[in-house]
Length: 542
Image (tube, rainbow, N blue to C red; front, side, top):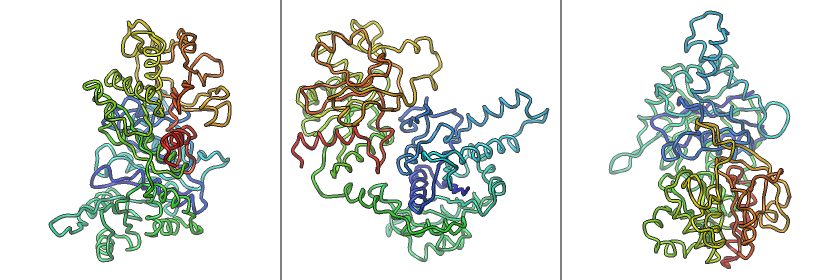
């Protein structure tokens, strides 16, 4: 087993996750089987209770794990199916150590960070790294490990110490340390400064880890003199200083890093012989994403639109749907609260959209604005896609304005409404804890024949990932179906409605699950492929 450990310095948000994913792409394209682990030093057990404004989206895995959004990058870039243990947090580690102490596993020893916590971290990494995530048998060849946060953070100290020890546990020849740093531009002439990188690497070296490769995030390529300067001060060869300049699409980064020789140097350091990677599929994606052809314009009407990472997987899935149709996708994020404050804005903001999508979310804020957007999509015959809460609000809108159920609502927003067409799941009514208690992970669904959903998937039974508490209220099935709502997807036992549609519409579909979590650039999700296709065809975009 080979390990590539990616750390970051100077500041957060440098793109460690995309860098780690791109390294994985290069290794995989050269023939290696890969897996990934993300270390998050925060005390939370998982990302499930964290605000999308503070931490970005919560990515959900097949096994129900609520994890950091970087695991979404790993799954998308590397075509993996990871589990909850691929996201390691301080909350998980300390829980295991305390449980072991309570059982008496430490035989009366004083339990300390070293060796007990650091040992648990190393054992976790080694165990999870050997679990295949690509659907094949046998352990992978390489594991990409990303250490979240910034070197020097108090929270990261136990992990850096554990990783320092880990290189001796598995053999130094089997570990490559990659440090991502910043080379900012300062002054009126735009001089690139290497001092932040020097200090960041020195901080890492003081702890006992000497990086093998330094990836420098910068606006412009580093020239030879700058690379040599970083090389001298940071104790690496010049060809191990890698330029990671800003790119216009993240799917271009693997090729940029390959051009810098990162994959060849990493393989040399790990003692791996590998052929030239095949990056043509990624070049094809870039050519579509950056083409000059007319774009399909999608209005995303949500409530977290001011935070770019809140809809990360959704954004990428729409791009994937465009790539599959050889079409550029242009996204406009619209705050649904705008429509509540000024209903006249609905048509003004949405009239130019080729399609409208209402994503998931929690809480009452902005819901009536989403109702207005869906009503506009239904009446104007604009292709519509509703996901999770988006589907629930579509049911509310249909119940109010088509089925004549005045006051139809969800008990999430109005506990005493006259027509609770969306209600709390029975097993959720006695739950007090918020973390890890929703309907989470992959569940099967049966699709009805001659429906948009069935046409998209091409099969009757599917499996999709969920993250919600409220469900379609079965009390209203008959009345809503009689009014024209098509229940095109249900659970195998028929008790849960998973997909709803409208017949006399170019494309109107809502799903209770989150298809964006399973979309990949080289394997676009069928619902997004068909949604973008419907938007293009309905608007004669060719």
